[in-house]
Image (cartoon, rainbow, N blue to C red; front, top):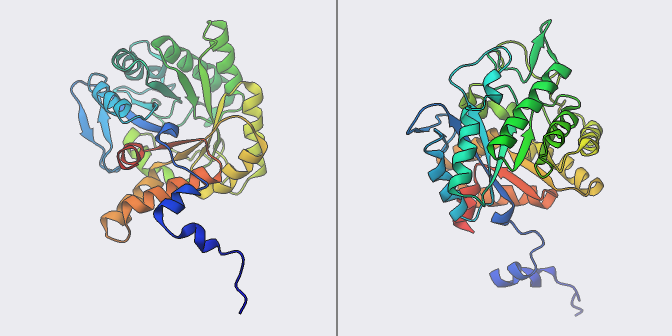
Length: 322
């Protein structure tokens, strides 16, 4: 009787063997934890649409940031919810805005924790759109000018990385020029380069009260059917000065992450968005799967596809479990 020379099961024979030959490793070093800050004081309010996520005020978010840093997570991503909204989202670049104050408090409490800030207008505009509305449409260039103001206000407050998420054409160039002209040469841009018009943003929009009051975002966020266009968007953002690019969402677009990894050398981030997060949480709470195991499997798939960085609401769970 002849025996096969190659038995791949030998490499799966024990936990230690599997660990030794594991090709993809999920590390806390590559995680970013999103945080929601809103106006008020002494706030830590549960977000109904997102399990174990909270709205913080600028005075309470520091304790959360300290915990995140103690877990070894290197960065947080701040989203702001103002108490007043207007047609152009003017609170987004206010010197005393909630994000600007939160940046200062976090950097004071945990100087080494990287603070990334979302640069967009949807949470600040009364219409819920990501830009300036003219003739019932989002005006691209007028919006870019305001986004540059937002990014600059975050840089002055002490942000390490600014992350434009609006999907306006040319906004990375506007932001890079504004930063350079004001001597913020070391502020990195993490651009949402391939952000798709997705059904998976629902819980987040509830948390930030940012759903459009009319129409949708399909004229600026990407068509979910397009892969080549996603690569073109990424290439343009890199050319304009992006240091890191984001693909969002993650799970329905693992192919985009993979293709981007094959083509581009810059760091690639994937956003494991609120709908993906709550889909798994809901299944876990219903007893349909092992939430911890499914979480690690899901995040590992994103890393295996080629993401260097994963933005995820599971970051603390991963850090506690690894």
